[in-house]
Image (cartoon, rainbow, N blue to C red; front, top):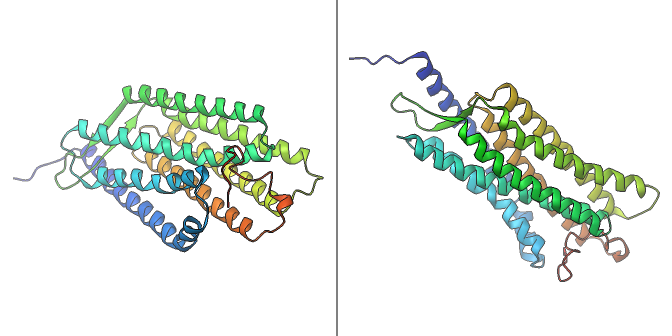
Length: 287
């Protein structure tokens, strides 16, 4: 006897299959990027000094592995009940927040260095960062109350996804957008203040990295805000969240290696003092 499925069941099954393809593509992209930069990364890890910034790099570089693994497990294993899916989604959300936080920490340190280790700037950034972190967790918990988990009723189609009819989903990205806007503003203000001063090649690279990173972050956050508001009940908005976390982590780590490589080939120590990411830790040095 042939079982008939409703149009909603067929749509949910199609969405789950498409999400699986997209998730696999994203994992392939991250693996390809990791492979392409493997030589540079091992050179950096083996030849650079062990500092807190290096530890931050290692965490930032490898955290995406955990949330992508969770995502793959979520889409490729059967989810007989919604509780299992909720647990996986909660784990993914926590790891994704850690990933974005680590990426942002890199550029908080860079902005702090641009401002000659100004303690007022550091205090303002840390306050905003902590506010962002706490608010994101609270909003995430509130969003769970208005979210639904969809599991396929069609045998053979695995995975699950979360949808929500609440605009609270967009608040996390709105907060991130405001935070990134504040940091890029600090960078631009500093550039305007020092535009007549020759601060060296590394300073120029640092400014370009900051502006490009936050321009990319602002664009991706704006896209996620629009998608969360306009298509909050869609199965695909979580993929755009994954994409932003992944791109921010890749940009932060690749830019750090580029800056380290440039620093290695620079021998003019007069231009380096203000741009070490680890100047806030007396014992640390980027090289």
